[in-house]
Length: 277
Image (tube, rainbow, N blue to C red; front, side, top):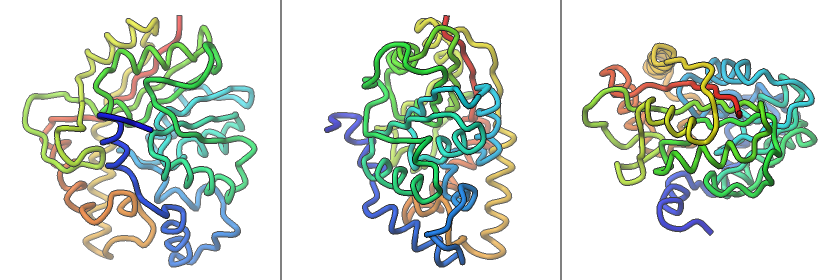
C-alpha cells in the first residue's frame, strides 16, 4: 500500500471502473469492445504530451527487437507497453502505483490480443520488484514529475537494466523560472508536482551509471498536438473516447494550464536516452 507522496499520487490518478468507462466510450464511438485492435485504443492510450508521435519516437530510440525484454515504469493504462509489443513483438512488463490503471491495462491488453506479450503489476518506481539486470530496455514516460527523488528513480531503473541496456526518459521538465498553473494532468497542485530541469536529470542518470546518448526537446510537437486538440474541440466538442476520461471533470482546465505553461516556455517534454555502463 503506497504511503506519503506515493499515496497522494496514486489518489490523484485513481479512477474506479476504468475499464468499464473506456469500454462504454468505445461502444459509443462505434467500436466493438469484443473485437479490438491496438490502434483502436490510441485516443485514450497516449496519456502524455506529444501523443502517438512521441511514443513512436521513444520506441525507435530504444531500438526494440522481438527478443528485447522491456520494463515500462509508470505504465498507466498500458498504452506505450501495448505499442512496444504490437510494433516490435517484444515482451513488456508495465508497473504503476495506481491499481485502477493496472487492472484496466491488463483487461485492455487482453481485449486487443496482446496478453502474451505484455503484463502489468502494481509497484513503485523507486522500489522495483525485479532482480538486477532483468531487462534490456526500460521507459519512464511522464513519471518523474511525480517522484521527488530523481536519483533513486534513475538508480532503480539502472539496477534492473542489463549492461548496455537502454533507458528512455520522456518527462515534462522545468526549462524556465515562473509559476506553473495548476491543476495539470499529473498534479492538482504543487504538493505532488516535482518537476526538475534537464541538468538535474542528467546528473541523476550519470550517478546511476547511465550515459546519455540522446536528448531532444519536444516542446514544439506538444504545442502542435495541444493546438490541434483545442481546434477539434472548438469545432466538434470533446470526443467520446479521449484523454479527458482519465483527467476527470477538470480536464479542460488541466489542458489549458499545460498548454499555457508550454507556450510561455516554462516547461517542455524532454526525451533522454541513456545506456547502462
